[in-house]
Length: 319
Image 1 (cartoon, rainbow, N blue to C red):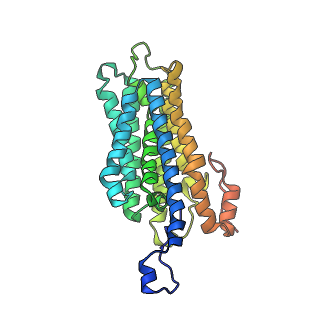
Image 2: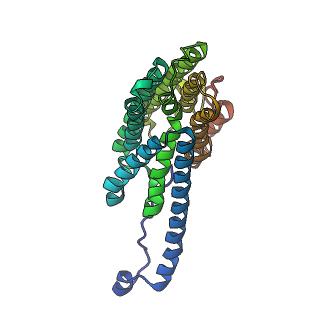
Image 3: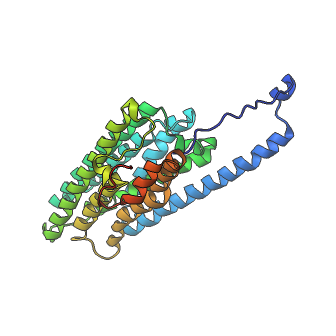
C-alpha cells in the first residue's frame, strides 16, 4: 500500500500572519502539482472512455459500457466527490458487476442459454464474495491508503472510478457477449466443462487464500508479521492464482461460441493479468512488503524459496 498522506503543516516557527496567508512561493510550488494531477486525470479518463467506446462498439455491447460508466460516475458524484472518500469504491465495483450481469440477462432474455446462465451465476458468486470481503476490509481499516494521492485532485480521483468501470466492463466481456448472441447452435461441450472446472478450483483457491490471510491478520500477535502458512506456504500470491484460474475458465467456456471479433472477450483475462502483475496488485504489495520486511532474514528466505505464482514446494521455516 502507498504510505499515508502526510500533513502539510510545518514544524518551523512562523508568525501568525505568515501561517494564515500562504506565500507566493508556496502557491507556485502547489500549482504545478495540481496541474500535473489534472493532466494525468484527464489522460486516464480519456483513455478509459476510449476503451469503453471502442470495445463496446466493436462487440455490439455499447449499452453495457454505458451502464458500467454510469454506475461508477454516479457513486463518485453522489458520495466520492462530495466527501473526498473511497469508502464505497470497492462496493461500487460489485454494484457495477451486478448491474452488468443482470442487464445482460434482462435485455437478452430471448437469447439466454444454459452456458450463459451458468457463467452469469458464477460471476455473481465471485463478485459477491470478493466485494463483501473488500468492503469489510475498508470498514475495518477506515480507508485504502493507496487512494490518498488520487484524492488530492478531483479529476485525478474521477480517473480511478473511470478505470474501475473499464476493469469491470472488460472482466465481464465473456458474459456480456455470450448473453447477447444466439447460442442455440452451440450446446454445452467438453470445452465448457473444462472451463467450469477451472472456475470452481480457482474460486476455491482464491476464497481460501483470502480467508486464511484475513484470519492471520485478525490476530494481534501477527500485526507486524507476514503470512507463510496455509496456501501461502506454497505460493506468494495464491489468491491471484485463483483469480487467474477462474477467469481463464470463463473465457475457455465462452470460446466454444466466440467467433471473429468476439474473441476479444479474452481481454477479460488479459486485463486482469495486467492489473495484478503490473499495476495495482503484485507490484504495490511487494513494494510495501520490501519496505516493511526487506531486511528480515526470514522474509528474504521466504521470497527466495517460495514460488511467486504457481504452487510449489514450501520454503519451510527460516533457521
